[in-house]
Image (cartoon, rainbow, N blue to C red; front, side, top):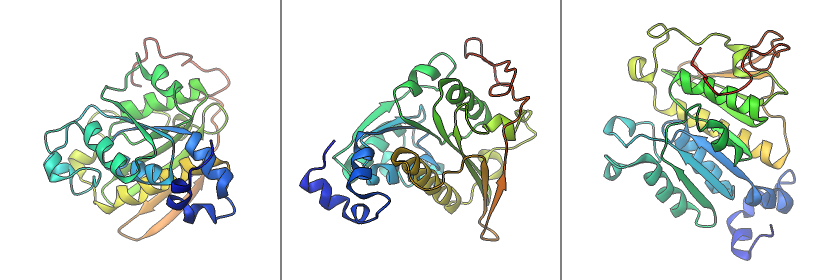
Length: 262
């Protein structure tokens, strides 16, 4: 896909970066990304992917905008309260960059539709806020051979890693067991410091762009942690687990039919 003169002006600061250039920007124009969740992580991830010129962005979310979202979800505004997050997101993203296509998926990401949803995109960004969806996304992307840009946030901390489905360590390799209900509180119970998802969501956008263009060193087999209270970033090497139930040597999760959170 060639760039128009207007696109060349829009992405001028990208075009002068050797690792991107015209060829890289054309790859982004031809590429697609599905962002599952249009909240705290999804807001910055979607904004930066749209601004970068990813040609087709899928926005998946079933929720409506609530007042309590707004301190950490800049994709939405007070006027959007009560409306679908996908609709609010699409309007803001197209206002930012009318050169791209935005596809709304106002559905629940579930075992019945997961494989079909991710199949239509080049890269998947995990911006969910619950463990069941996170494990399902991981399993679907590993089984489908998709690259997943994973992240999570809580209070002052955030984590991120990028998973090449079936090739690098997956989420289950690092966190084998889903937390028992009530043991690991989510943001609704423990809180989220507003700037944290902004930082981690921007990291996710950078990871997705690197994967789509093919430059730099993505967070494959690496777990990045961020502590906003101490303002520190820490990186931990991770490896594929031979006993992993989805990407190990003898997987027990071989499909999504009958998938249950575990």
